[in-house]
Image (tube, rainbow, N blue to C red; front, side, top):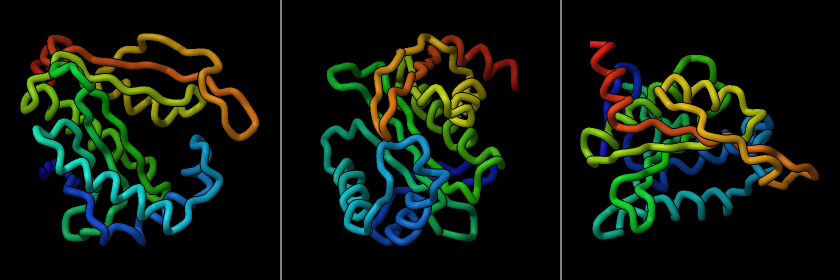
Length: 184
């Protein structure tokens, strides 16, 4: 699968993305909201292989794509849309971006493209996502995608010697369509 936006190309992840993903997944800013404290090359290789293996599923229900800039095939992050198990009408999205590219709207642009793909190409009724409550950047991405806060799960993640709250967001097809019409 390949999705092109105004400023990005979202393409299938390959083993050639190893060096770029390894570099950003070891950035302290990236690691702040993950359980990991560092990522070895073998960790990232296994991660990429897991994402590549998603392509073998028949029918395919999970898509994880590299985020690249036009004219430069270097992976600056990845994003995905994953249909829920045993539910053809709901999926969740996720995204991660090299901190060197934060603050430019790339995560929002990629996430919006996934939401649009989910509703227009996958026939979804609902798209959801979640983040660590302290991760204000990720929360902004979800709201910019038209998602509504549905709840806060208190102390449901434990890592780095502390409990973290998570925020649950979602957008329904009719809400997304109403906003899309208003932007036209």
